Length: 285
Image (tube, rainbow, N blue to C red; front, side):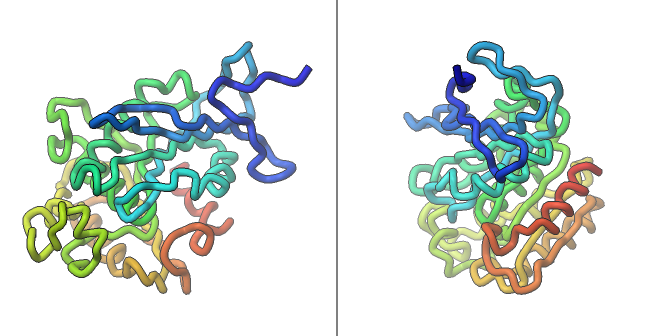
């Protein structure tokens, strides 16, 4: 008789001949305005055992809460699944985070949702074999922008639905191809939609509030890894250069990786075994 699958989970092989991963699809972490918000949770299965319909994990894994980029619009949550499965095999639980699209809720709804997702992962860490003290926020493009705002405001009341909530205590942030200064993107329609139909020049205060550098202080935060393609045609790599400088000036640790010739996004032009090794070393530090 074949081994039963975990409820709401599929066991897949990310790379033939290598360790399988468990993928829990469409796990609801919150409900906002009648809309269910989901996580796609990928677990390495190296030390997992099936107990009836449950999966028991012998150890705890660091977790990466990855926010899929979408121009702040509706996300394709499975777009990076195969790449993230490969990285999960290195010993990470990866949770792909859904946020409300800008057409439903403008900024800062996406940041609120991501913070709620991280708190949910911490509260449910036992079920998914997560080390609650090693949660990294991550994302690409607009998802990276959201991740950086979550990281920059961790431990403060800014951009938090619950100002009295406990800090997220993120261990680090890893971000790809992210806009960091919306005032540099006045003609971008996605930015306009994020700001409720106004361009940054029409809503300068809101645009500045949506820039992570404007939330940085000397409060202790986990290190940041910024990755950007030098030929990014959507978000110029200067966004990452500028933010790396802002982080360092505020006393925070930041590593900047520029991928020569890579265009926008990380799937697959920006993601390589070499970059995966860099990420692994950064996250293990």
